[in-house]
Structure formats: structure tokens, C-alpha cells
Length: 142
Image: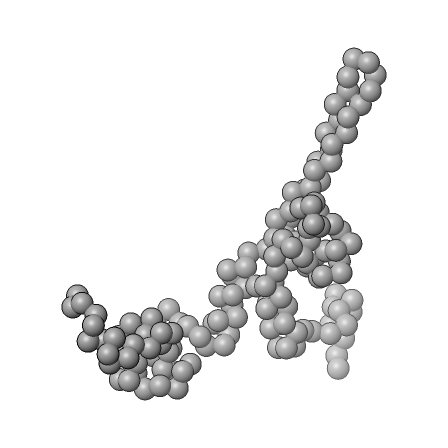
């Protein structure tokens, strides 16, 4: 394999499984991965859960208040912002072929469910809660 200048520090290039795994992780990451039970940032927990990789921005602010009697009150706050989940979910969906801007949603359902488009109900709710013939007769006409 030829050596590419400047790329010697990389040990390998991410494969498809690692890329999908990382994208899936970012899509599932929550603040629970980086905060303790009291809602405070916990670096050790962030490292253990892997949540440290989902952090977009960590801002640490120290505020020192000095009193006339010579005492000081120091307050440290952490502001944590995670990476955007929506873009990770969108990338996963596009990779898996779940949607396309030009694609008919009924064609997506046909592909995912294996049900011909002609047999799909008019409303997607019926896929989750099928309506029996008795219930159909009792429903008011719209």
C-alpha cells in the first residue's frame, strides 16, 4: 500500500459498520450520558458512556465574587451542548433508503412493509391500529 504524505497518523479509515455505528450513537445520545443525578456535568460519566463524543460544545465559566470582609465565593458552571441528532438520523435514513425527497411516502411504506401500495390503507394510523369492519361501520362519515 502506498504511503500518502500527511496521512501517516491515521491507522485506518472508518469502514461502513463503524460509520453507521457512530452515526447511530450520535442519534441516540442524550444529556443523561454526560450529566450526573443532580444535573451537573460529569466528565468521568461522559467518558464511560461515550457521551463525550456527542459533545459539540462545553463551556466552563468561573465566577468569583469578593466581599468586603475579604471572603470569596467561587461559582463554576458548565454549559453543555450536544451535536445535532436530526442530521444523524437523516443521514442514517438516507443511507438505509428510508426516504428520498422525491419519493412518494406510500412507496416507502410499500418497500418497508412489503405490502403492495394498492393494499395500503388511506391513512397511516390504520397500519398501527387496524380498523375492523364493525368499527368502520360505526365511524361517522367525514
